[in-house]
Length: 96
Image 1: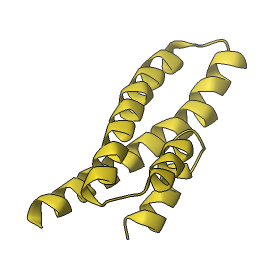
Image 2 (image 1 turned 90 degrees about the vertical axis):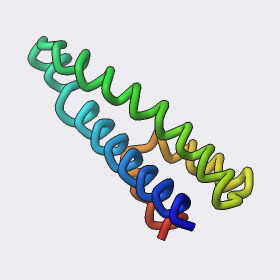
Image 3 (image 1 turned 180 degrees about the vertical axis):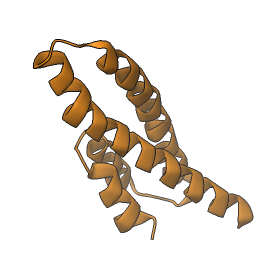
């Protein structure tokens, strides 16, 4: 049971960081690139978000296995990863 709690906590942290990185990418970095012609932040935040996205997908798979999520729940978690605020929904709905 201890291992499960650590897995859930780790997935929550990754999920939160992925969601925040996506919001920063969309709300700050992209406007800086396209409005003020400064693409540097997109490179940094985009890379971080990409790594966090891959960790999120791997974590969702791990949660599917450990929490016996159905395929539907897993695909909802994956779909929410591409929506702003989506990972926050997954945390509240499936990890509470």
